[in-house]
Length: 374
Ligand code: FA5
Image (cartoon, rainbow, N blue to C red; front, side, top):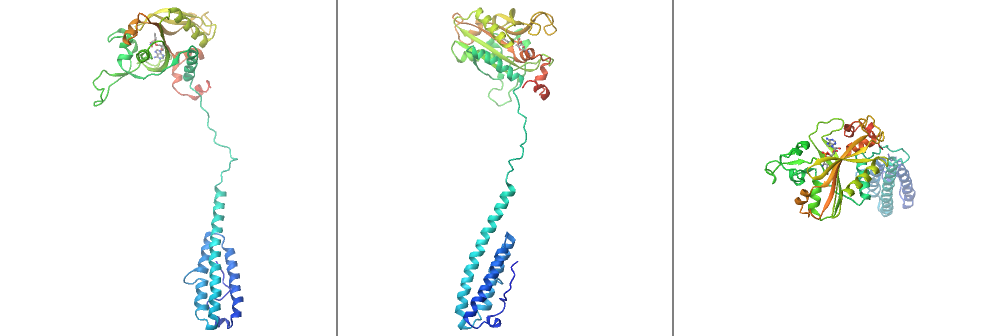
């Protein structure tokens, strides 16, 4: 708080001032006192007290000088007192403002120092995730087919019975539908499709054969990675949601040899050059002839072990030459065109390649399992 050594409550007469020459030391003392007060105003609160002590309307020093020195001054002093008071007021006002700026700047600097980031502190370590083994397996398979000139296409997981079954030559009531029972979706009343045949979660990626051929003229060389769904009870090799990659090649001169050569190349790239393949007759309504692709067991190299149930062979995937009936659904010329298709379970491929004994591990998200496949 400002301290007053001058008694500004007294009149000049009471102070014994009668001549103008006596005023200069009087005002000089006042300025010196003001300078001490200004120096002590170091924060916002003390600055406010300082301002009020000198400029306060009712009892500030300048008001008191006006009331007690100027107003009752005799005529011979009045002019000189008025002049000195004006000078003092200009000085006080300028200095009070200057102190305000200085106090604010000091406060801002203190705050910025308080809030400054300490960049030397170690940050919070966040563990870096990795791609899931299923995603890695997808990418391995895709890479092999991309190198053969195939392109990757994706399709809807919610399908119509037409694309999932009918256009693949699986009419209603065909027994092949029983092996692929799935989840049906009833459309809520009011949406445009309600009342139409129910949609379903696709049971395989094969509907994309039809959708792709509908959209583009031959030649076609595609693979289709994606999720599929079946009403299968979960066990160590079955899940109700799993992953497939479909393959389709259609052109004017594709033969069974191309089919076999492609399958052999793919399997040896994925499982290693020592693995051999064989084709076993099979049945799919949308391929003719159809085959199951087996590979020699990559663990025992064909001599027989627990993994291959001592047969030396492991069943890998279903495939075959595209049935001409499918071409009719997409307006392809069945007489001119030929091709092959295959569909493999990505999860089972990952089980085989990485020696995993339970498909459920892929879906449980146990970090101890996932960390083993960085
Ligand atoms: C099909 O899905 C055919 N669309 C494959 C095909 C495509 C044949 C093109 C001919 C031409 P399949 O029902 O066999 O075929 O299933 C293919 C693979 O999916 C199986 O070999 C198996 O690896 C995997 N699979 C089938 N059901 C399950 C399941 N519940 N859980 C995990 N994988 C499964």
